Length: 66
Image (tube, rainbow, N blue to C red; front, side, top):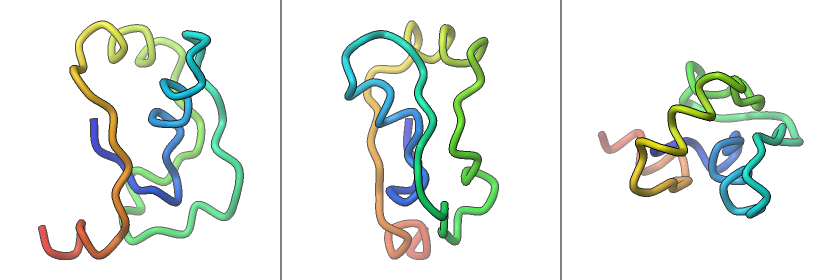
């Protein structure tokens, strides 16, 4: 899973280590507007934690290169 570092709710949730989804604080100021929700869906969280191999957060300049 790749998401913007300024709106990394999934990455922050997995990093917490408690197995629960967590909201991401802040402005959610990213060029990846479709990913700037700041709050993981609890249903999607269950699926993603089982299916994803890795969660990472990247700066906007990486997305701009894509």
